[in-house]
Image (tube, rainbow, N blue to C red; front, top):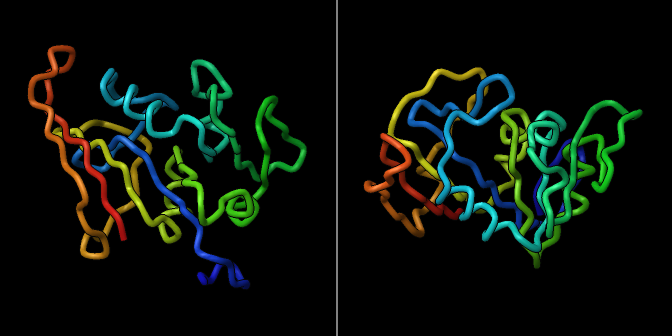
Length: 172
């Protein structure tokens, strides 16, 4: 059981999937900082058929929304908002009600949503870009002593980008 805002809840299979720079940058002007084809394909493969939970700004930044072949859940604090083709919720607690302990649900952004869900996540799918970027949205600090590295794949030969990156999977 986990404690959330005044009540107990069962442990859910909540995973975070994110691409971050080494300075924890994840976005600028409501857009991604880079285009990594391998990362986008990995994201699609991992999240396909699952629930994806995102904030309003992340939803609005999607080139094709809602994301196909997934249950899209959008978190907003404005009770008058509804997002076509999505489940609209008005708090993190409401979003957690759509997660269960059998099927993995994925938190896909943005910064505030990541920060609020991080305490409940039990798996991290990180794409770590080995470079600093200027940004206005950052991923929260992660205490990796709470996590165990399950898998690491280093990409050093991407001809589409002039930086190296790694795919990392952590569990706690």
